[in-house]
Image 1 (spheres, rainbow, N blue to C red):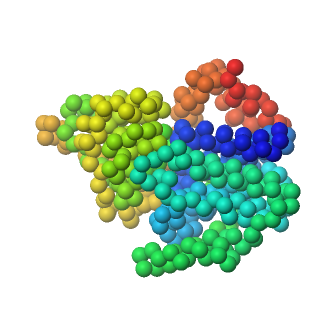
Image 2: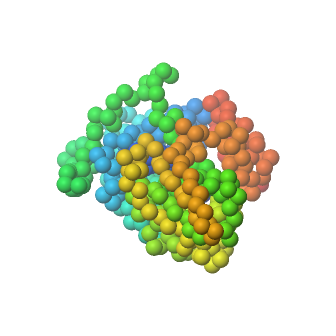
Image 3: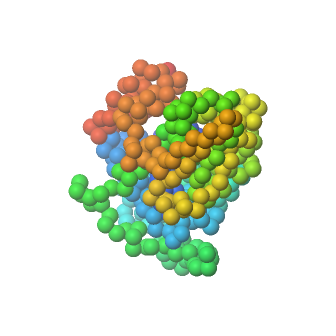
Length: 399
């Protein structure tokens, strides 16, 4: 595989998996989807003829750096209008560089090359959403792979891109947030880096999405589904669905565009749509985001019954918790309320191995077949013993 093919493969793999939006999620000062960064080292492992252990190591590194970057902002870059793909561009070349066994000097250049061209404004997830919403993070992964390959060939990048003159920390320090300059805790970024089997690895703190929707929608959707099930509520019974969430969730998921989604990209970031589809269909799966369902005008009256409001009490609990309260008022005047602080898939309420297997087959069964899905699951669960990844690529190919 040539260099161009490696880059195209890493981008295509990450973008296609991101399109489904059933990815891993971590949210501290900033949110991130570390699984977006796996495809790049995967493509490089294939081209370099490396093993399953090499891919595992690169994945752990991608998660570690990405998640640490999302912890150190004061506040996070998302608070003043930047997308977290900005941070992914610093993590992706480290994972790719480890696969390519770069020297420390080459690794520094790879980070500089990647980050210098991947700063991303938050417009991609604001208001009406487009294909770029699912593309900017995989693009950062692609830049990581490309930058590592360039660095290996001697191309240099700015070594001061993180904490030097006009680097990440310095540029954002000019931003005023609530009367104070934005800062980063540079020491926390590298404190207690894991170096043995006894160390704590950030990957263990990462959640897994149980619904194919925006991360902050999980708690309210879980709360609504519990309320509906426990009280045997039907769509025709509902007068109003009041959804209380943190302010940023109300802003991202409840703005006017989200009440009339016209694409999958807007629908899976729309609380009114997700709540309406969940209420009527009894589930929220990739099926609910097919074009014909998103454009179904029968859902509009249900969406208009959803009232998304910020709750100040919840602000102090975030991001340790993702609190949401859903109150359903029926046409008979009865009110039923449920609060959820930890969505399903969070490490404190993790998905079981069986639940993950069901999710895996639901996503891959129509593509490669259920029998091949089972074989693929078996390979993945023993990937640490694989000397090459040839079988992985064979099993992910539809026949």
